[in-house]
Image (cartoon, rainbow, N blue to C red):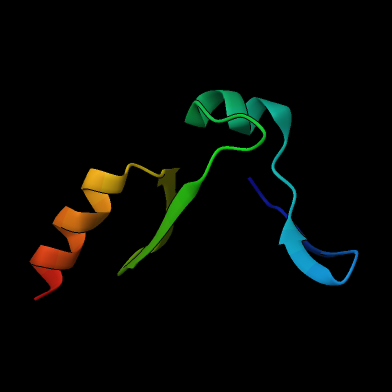
Length: 59
């Protein structure tokens, strides 16, 4: 899915279509975790325990 980065007020953002939000299990106000890998970026639901695990793996 091709998306465009847009100016939103004084910020810049990415608007996710409703069908993509549904596939990711996300809704307005949710937090997401963006990770970078060899194949590009991955967006997933933010889970505090998962980020702690990622920090441990990075060390």
